[in-house]
Length: 239
Image 1: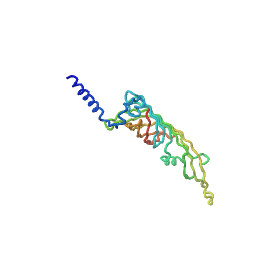
Image 2: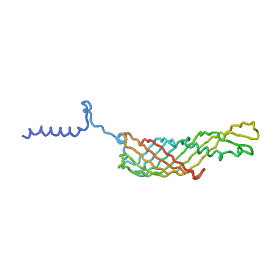
Image 3: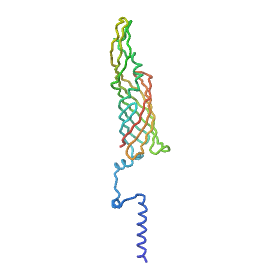
Image 4: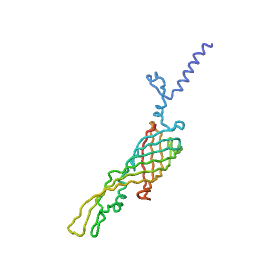
């Protein structure tokens, strides 16, 4: 009698194993392979969710907007992070600001005299580089969406800009003088604090993190009190 029950028990065990793996459909070919062992490094690629026990993390990527920059982020723990961006500002957004500064940037040799005038024509910006460092506090927003984090922070920004102005010089003392064109260059180095807010999303099938942030820059050196909103969208590879 015991021998008659043995095939039934074995059959039930085989049936239970089949039900346990029934969620994954396998072809006759793939069924012959065993379950692969995945290392932690590969597991992060397959499942790149920030885990509280695996900090610190690092991120390297780019940001598009004002400015366009390469970006690095160090995730010290679940709430605190450090980020650094370096790149080029979107100079077209500062055209009015540079034009308004034309008169203040005129060299002494172009100050003009009685019957003389200097008229702004145009300007170009050969380079407008910046470097920014910031400390961030972030918190989970899982109630909104899985993998979503909000963050806010403070930092410091350094800017180095070169502006080339073209102008028209007129002299009313000579009615036949149609004026002459000229140019001069002004280098601007300044710095100041930034305050920012943003959100970051990291629930992907690859170790990537997408973010959107808005900053407020305040000039405290060259043009004290000047403020401007900046910001952009970016993507980082997490490792």
